[in-house]
Length: 330
Image (tube, rainbow, N blue to C red; front, side, top):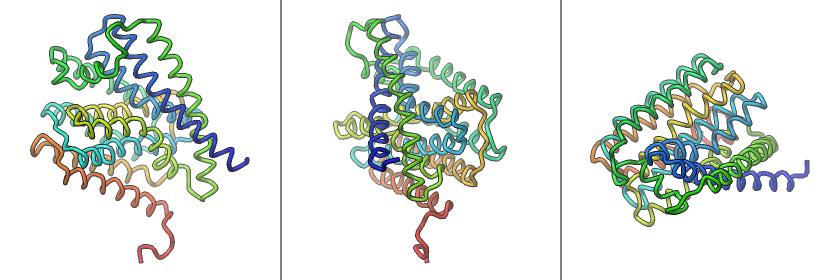
């Protein structure tokens, strides 16, 4: 295949994933608002699932191609980007406040997701039964979140605030919401197809194994929209709900995206990176929650530590997969 053609396909995949993710978010928000759903329900499902929809699309595409390690690497990589890179640089731009509820409820759910990742890595795969359990865990978390946020205003509810921010206007329509949702879904499917195939082909040219491409490039592609949105919001001083939103999206990455991919096609993990990567996710969650709970905010110094931790994770991944140049570490 012509190298320039591969890069063109990769760029098209990135663009389609970005457009598709935003289309799913806006379509879901407006459709649910037009049907009279509570802002909490709109935020939890349309926003959290919509934000993670590129990760879900890529995971599903890789699963149907029987690339289990790519599925796992994409989910882990996107989660680490959410919790370390995006929040780290976001806090460097402007300190990020967070409510105790985020640490206790959402952080607790993310810790459980990290433990589940470790268990699945030890088992060596994710069958359809485990996939159903993962999706059920996200459903249970959503019910708890909906109940605890039901009477909260947008100022104190991550779900409500996100739903209000991402709506088209005061008069949402079913037709407009459906159109955006369908266009977004089509863009996601096409984008995932182009991005996965071309990224793996480019990685092969440079001697990178599929799990390395997934943990690095593909996960970054999936996270680009929320990365840019969060950093722009931080620059404008709108950081009140960033931590809760990114943790919720990460919970869906593990329970939702991984679970749905396993239901579509059972996953068999062959990479030796699976367990260390799952442990890294647990450490990242614990580090973030300890930082936030000390003063209910992320300071610039803590943001720098999180960002450095992400690059440390990438470095460890490269070392573990023997991708570093000989003699680099002495």
